Length: 338
Image (tube, rainbow, N blue to C red; front, top):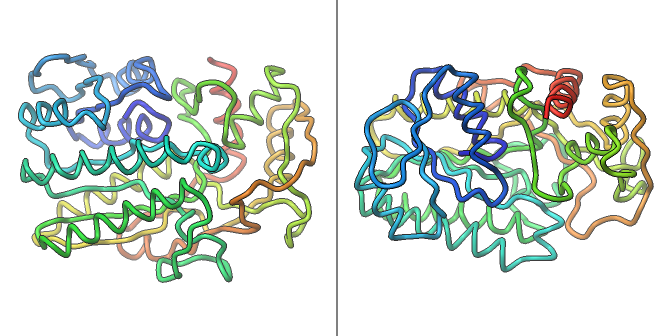
C-alpha cells in the first residue's frame, strides 16, 4: 500500500469513503508516501505497531511473508476485501534474480491467502499483469487470449492467478478479481506521490525522468530491430490514477456480488506507444533532452503489447481517461517536486 500503485489506490479508496489498512515492508517504498496520501486526502494516518483503533487510514509495517504478523493483523481488523499489491515487478531484474521474485511474489502470497482463508476473508483484488500473455500472437489483447509467460516476473503472476482460481474452485465463497495491468506511468496531479524506486530504476518512465534531470547520463533503449513502426518495443501505457480508479471499480463490483466468483479484467488504454514515442513526448513536455543509446534486446521482452479494454468498460463501468501528455506532465511535476 505504500508503493507506487498502492499509494495511488489508497488516495482513490479514501476519497471514495473506504477505510484502509496498509501493510508494507518498505522494500521499495517509504512511510513518506503514506504521509502524502494523508495530506492529499486530508486524512489522519495512524501508525500502528501493536493492535489498532478504528480510523479511516491505518498503517502497519509488516512483511507479507511474516505469517505470525499477518495472523495478528487479521485478528485485530475486520476486513471486507484485500487488495494485493505486494509484488516485485521488474521484468529484467526478475531474470537476474528469480529466487527473490518467487520468494516475495509466491511464498508471500501463499502466506496471505492462508491467513485470509483462516480468517474467513474471501474477497481479493489481485494485481496481475499483461506479462501473463507472453508474446501475444496478435494485438490488441483481450482476456480470452492464451497465457504464456517469458520471464520469472510474469510466471509469478501466472502462478498467483492459478492459485486464486484453484482457491475459488475449492471453495465457491471466494470472490476474486484478477486485474491484468498494462504499463502504469504518471503520478498524482498534486506532485506529492509518484514512482520512486530505490536505486537505479528498472522501469522506463522513472529512468527517463532521472536522465531528464541529469541524475543519470543516458537511457538504454533495449533493441530497435523489433517489427514495429520505429523498431522499438510498443506498450500500452496507462496513467496510474486511471489504474487506481480501476481498483475502486473492482471493489464496487465485488460489493454488489452476493455469491463468490472469479473475474479477469485488463486495465489498459487500448493504445500502444513505442519507447521512442515516449521519449519524444517527455522531451516535449519537459523541455529537456533525454539522451539515449540503442543496446541489445533484453531476454523476456516482447515486441508489442497493448490491451483491448472493452471488457473492463462493460463489466466494471471503467475506462482510462488520461492521455500520454498528461502522464508525462504529471511525471515531470512529481520529479521536480521531490
